Length: 364
Image (cartoon, rainbow, N blue to C red):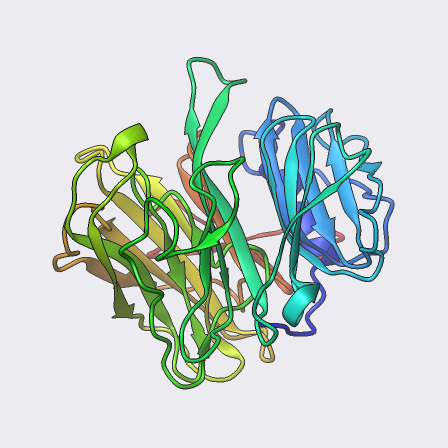
């Protein structure tokens, strides 16, 4: 869902904070992106490599922890597109997603460090609007190695259903779920009247909800829900893809729910007690009233092989200090961090209490 809040400084700063140069006490390192574009998409590959994307076909790349941001070539015909999401695989390879009605929602891919781009996929729904794209990544034998399996792309409801596409791997054709190999028995989930997603930071969906699936969060008049697929019966198919009968569950979240409010961002953290479960952090609020913020922690969530049973939904005792549009977990410092137009908050107790983090004495 489109809204007019500008996130240029917000998400550029968020990107820098999550780079490997993160200081021990979660201090800010403000850097210049050398662009006037509104930046919403960000992906940190590691080893100083990160990518960002935004309005007017803008795509940025850094290889030195953000000290120097390279302005990438604009994909052909994309000069007016709004790139709300980007997923990077290494220093040379990335997929960028534009958000807009109908065929203004597109995917482009580069394999040469953003010198050239190839059009991968265009929204087949003339009334559709893409909100978020995420790939499942797994840590390899060294910090510089990640491998990728499934990806997920999700948009605003079309015909009362959330359109979801999957490529069954990072370099495969994109197909609607229900038509691809791993989710072929999984029809798209139904949306409530007025329910939608917010394309604020490309984090309304997490592709790391468990070993090989995803979860997403909604807002709008019918929203503020956590949605995820589960398998009624499943088995491993060839190439280790699930071939079970799938449907979607929805959990109502204790968050504001209106045309301009709801859940905006979700992040996951694997649990230590059960590798097939994760903890989820969800943030949001009301983007037209930036003083209204909310956060919800979901403990031990989303097993891929059975229905979610009695999850612990924990609303914040001290919520973030305003509307928040992105959240992430820092495993080194063991804290959650969330950002929004009026500031940043961190939590060290799984979202029960949030503390404001100021970039510097001179910054708001």
